[in-house]
Image 1 (cartoon, rainbow, N blue to C red):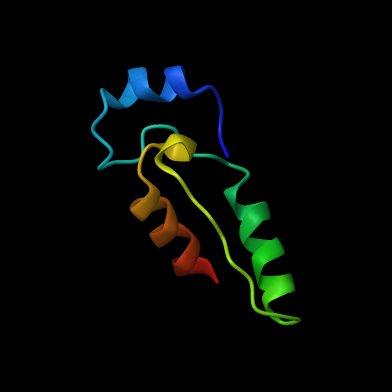
Image 2: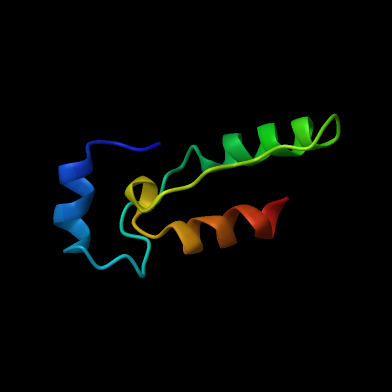
Length: 65
């Protein structure tokens, strides 16, 4: 889900339209999604507090799966 909520809110200034804290571990999450999606339907929840913009994080994930 991400780090401390207050830390990411300080970085974004409560404006959630850009990635302010890119996570290098996102590649591992994408690999897990790719593996699991072959077996069954899955739901992935992403919130703004992970990298700073949920829609942009979702775009990063979708680009690679």
